[in-house]
Image (cartoon, rainbow over the protein chains, first blue to last red):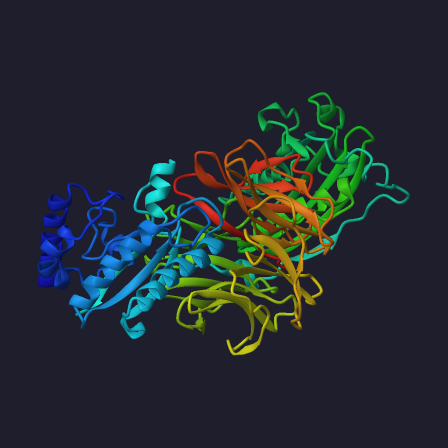
Length: 173
Length: 437
């Protein structure tokens, strides 16, 4: 429970630092590295499903690793996604004991089952790229949540773009 | 949990129909695609067993009326307009004053009576052609009073059979996913009249893709309750649940074969989804697809020899068919760049699916050979998740046309689309059982 309280406090700090957790525009590592030393422990184990159950999904749930985003019905990594993953890879190299779960998410459009399979592809694409950067594959697990756990709930392209993502959760240090 | 519908039998008998009377004239000629709203009166049943607290009389009539409305063929005349009161009038062909029904505009009439002794209900009900003043059909049902709903669903199916030549689909159940009791997606089961609602899962995580065993006794579904999306089978009679597949990653969209011996399911290897066949214990029999692409949503042909599924091996998602013995898959859909959710008709001739165009998702059917694609829904929100009724003529689907996602029923023409579920939350991923029998 102490961990949970710390987590909430750290999340609050991150929200303050980032000026809103739902921003898809976050680039650069400064926030992640500044808060990272504190944030690692508190965020451990806080996957999107747990956050959803706790009612905290979408409220500054960004950990030390950045989300990457995808086009509709695509699991292709664009240049922005690869740049984010290179920074995430650097964080993983700086924290060699950390293990991470890559979550694949989709927007609400389309079929539940197809989107679950698409989310699996997105998570895997992120993992594979991190492995090519030299991160050991056994430090990276994947899970798909398809369209089941949206960050943003409006029926707009802006919102959908935020929900088409791979999200990274530090599951152990 | 009240599971009486599954195992308590309803004994049905046929009441005598006047010799020489043919219903052929009614079948097919009056009813066909585009013909709607045949006016029917459904009278409350006459109580033959003295004063009772049970509301059998109106419950039966309400459920028959609701089923007939869902069929899209009938308009149920308002009970307040009925001149004949059930308790003061006859229910046999010789004792009905048909003028009392023709004058209010009824072309058909459902009328009957019941006796209730303790828990034992005996119910006798007939369908009349008001204009020709004759009986079209009669049924006697016997069973516990808790089975009045099934008796009504069975008789509604019989009325539909009399008017269309094919038995109706309503002696059946629906499983679906809903957020009606909070934010979590749980699985529910209900009868076609929205009654007998049962919540099947209560794990407060994510539960998706329910589907029925062919005997309508069990449900397959995928749940995140152990964190990984695993495949479960729950026996609705005993409540016993079995973990069937727990491979890391997806164990998703399982469908039992028509003979009940095998299960087609999507599993994931390193992010790539493929369709495999399991035996009833969850052991892999064979792999049905082996491509780098997404392969999901298997649906059996009614003879159990082929499986339709969705794959993006050609770019976007399209519908394919593969033999249940394996081998090369054949592409079925070529129009549109996003076709998903195949559902093979129990009659075998059509595959229903969802297609995206101009930003909207709609339900289509296509012949198994890939010809004659037809759009069933349009300009009414997003319409997804088609599942066929046991008769192969109706299907259920989810639609956002009223705001929240709700379930609707349509026939294969798309001509009548009637809302099935109401209330709060989103209802999605419906699965329509076979006839209960």
